[in-house]
Length: 637
Image 1: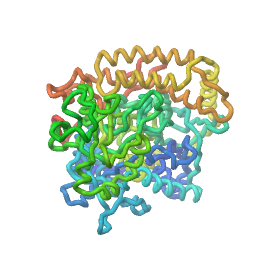
Image 2: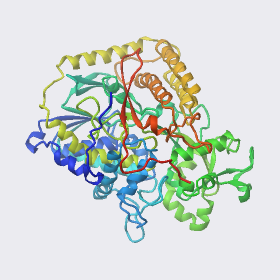
Image 3: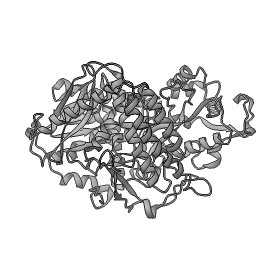
């Protein structure tokens, strides 16, 4: 099947406005007749629920946390992009669009990315109006900083807490609609299934994580805003609860999964210290504005950083990519760090680390200036490592961080299941094969505040409200299947914990499907994962029962999905015989070690259709056409 992204024709600068003029509307009197379910309450979910509720729809919002304020969006640190051009350094909507397309290694739709760049400015206005405390300069104007993959300063920030402040703004908007009665909030509820009636998404089945009871909920449309799947690697910068379950179970109900192999390894994370760890900690990419990345020139040099003279340091990003230096994009910076550590020049006890050094910036600007820009990040680093980064370099190393892949959606953010809309990191639409820093927050809020209110109206305007209820056979069957699956898990009574299986899966994924992939490694992963999955269903131990709070049961369901999804991710990586962005195949690289794309054979979105539990998924393609940017080698030198 050749997929149709339903992108509007005509000039990009006019496409979104023209498209909105042609879409159907729902009158204010009719909006209250429609019910919309929003799953997930991070930036995409909270902004969507608040916006749809304010428009007059009946919205039910679900999250597995005890409060929407605990969504993983709160962990984003460095900033949010917008093409305001406040520094007057040459930025524009087209330049933001071009940087994003190039940063994604030309594997994203032009129309979606241009729309994202267009609405970016409105996002900043919206957030300022909500009271988000963006940093300001001495005169009171909004401040900007630079991020990887750009040569302009377009990133708005609130110290190192940008995600937290943006989420609080969206949460305030959501809470206002909860108070007004237009949004009903369901905390501590986890989606277990998508209910499809006559080929359309008409609701979800969810488990109350406190009582253990399973309920179905009917609606006229469903919005999935459930984030990414980086925890398939076990150790990642994501919250431990972040998972693929909602998206993967929608995939099993007919929603195609697009580009699952596009995962991002973030270059600035605190290195792994041992098997005791269950997650890793991100250090914001914004630190690379003032921090210089280096390793010793001599292999095995274990001297303290201050003992290594300047002439014996290799500032390898500045050496290899002089045009961007320490602000090279994340995928490139991550592979460069791995390369020097593989050569034996890494720092720290494990040798898996590089220096992020602020001594030059502190000498030039003063410690107070650096403290004002990044103080909370330095404090967090010291609490975790017991090292003062004002006095010695930080030690950083790449770690799994973000998913560019996700459920396939068209220009309207609608999946291959009519009535199922997918927003934010849960969809694949804007970042291609690599996400530039500060673009995740931009996409989540763009989808929730400015895109879904228009596109979902076009669908609802063609749909009869309240056509199905939870008494429908599909809802009853969904609840029964979810209960059966949970009882099957509890009945195994094995000897290994859920975490042990998750850690083993993560080891397979990191070793064979991580920063550097090969045909041999991917083939091995595709043999190891099914064997581990079989063992899981024979030997996992889940204490407790199905009634009441049971966090091991929660984790078991999520790891069961990861054990299936990991195989899909590896299969997608094996089929794509090229290197692009975060997907780096060692068998497809230039003589200089850079990614070698194959535009003749792989300039498409790979969308996978579930064909059955014991069957291989079917590949469908959406060809990518580039009319406004020129396909060329992605070079940052």
